[in-house]
Image (cartoon, rainbow, N blue to C red):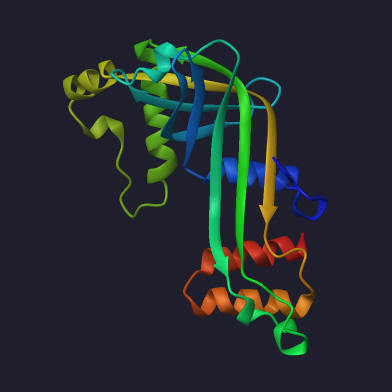
Length: 207
């Protein structure tokens, strides 16, 4: 990934992205070429040297059974936003400004391990559900559904674990602009209703 020094993601930013992104595109090489599937995942930081991403896919999805040996890749995306040059204070000074796009992303590489046992899948779907239901007013749990129904659902999926070997990550959040321009970006994003992207720029400025 092309990453200028001022856009390089810190370890803290990478961990935050993996904890909060929710889903990523799993890319694997097969005999027929590249395959990709968008999968919800949970980050397990204590597994292996660099952590692991746990996900699942439909058993009928041939990607899990056709992936070649070697590295797999999960592309994880954070908030992204169009940045208008009209938000920059420097536009009024010299006019030498152009539009750009702010974003956070991580390319997570590692070995793909397939899990086809009910115990692993049961733990995984509970963890995944609890992770996303935690902020709900009345969190739903897997155990609220009939046991036989859940057993049937588990038979229809396979678990996939990406054991992380390396991460290439980038946080392009206006770090290359002067303080007045950054103020303008934050104000412009908030005025557009994109408070999440505005908060990302604010954090990048103070980190």
